[in-house]
Each structure stands twice: as C-alpha cells, then as structure tokens.
Length: 88
Image (cartoon, rainbow, N blue to C red; front, side, top):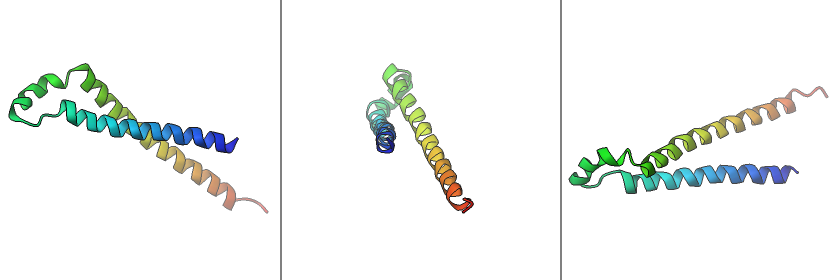
C-alpha cells in the first residue's frame, strides 16, 4: 500500500518536473526572440495561445513543485516529531 502510494506521488512529481522543463525550453524556442526582427514580433508572439499556454505551465508547474516540497517538509517534520516525542 505504501509503495503504491509512493509510486503515484513520485509519478506526479516527475510529471510536473518534466512538464516544467519541457515548457521552459519550448517557450524560449518558440516565443523568445533571437534576432532584431523577431524582437519586433515578440510583442505579438507573447499573446499567441501556445505561448500563453507554455507560460501557464511554467508558472503553475513551478508553484506546484514548490508546494510539493513544502508538503514533503511538513510531512517529514510531523514524522520526526512523532518519533522524538513518543512516550516510551
């Protein structure tokens, strides 16, 4: 039971890591200018659906990863405090 739950959590974490990583690279490839002419186009590119979607994944994926670390830290503290505060 614990192993199945752990594998699900790890799978979700890896999904967010990979999504964030790929979206960051795709955003710089498709939405960030490399030349002076593309600099002019960037004002229009930032409003395209694919650039907005990639930004959404980057922003929300990063926030989700941060929240996962906070939850993991809180869980560790709870487990540690239960271990050290036992009345034996």
